[in-house]
Image 1 (cartoon, rainbow, N blue to C red):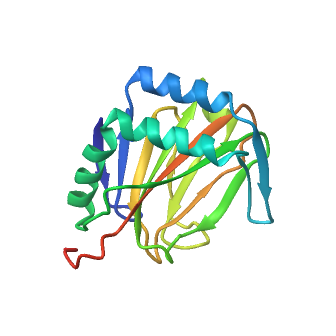
Image 2: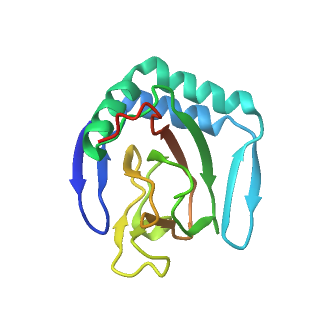
Image 3: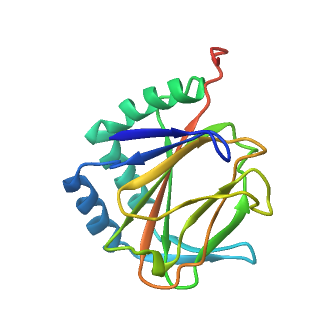
Length: 187
């Protein structure tokens, strides 16, 4: 995995590829097999797995390939924090008309890794990640949802991110959430 550190609009790390090609396709095939249920409000629209066991199976798969430990150590170095060893996982499926409005997740002291998984995403499909330091998304950075790419950031009051409406296709988002350690060792 290659990491590219960006400072604008806030410090974040671009990742590509996140997983091996075999792991990428195994994850997509596994996600395709899940039953999904809709979560929606005025602010967001996406699907989540119907069964908790499905999310657990994906997390176990990620932990078994061993990459998360390496990613965690790199993220600690990049963001100058200590992170808990075991991450939590959120899984979203985005279909036509799905997206997420601007938010920060600042209430949770974490480093988050957002990974895109899909088959043949292209720009006309929509579903583009937008990063900014304010809720109006001024001076944004745009991140395409190309499969097996991702970005990482440390949550704060200035880490606004949003996902533009998906126009076509299906894309999955894995949000790997590393809590900041309470050991007092943060830089």
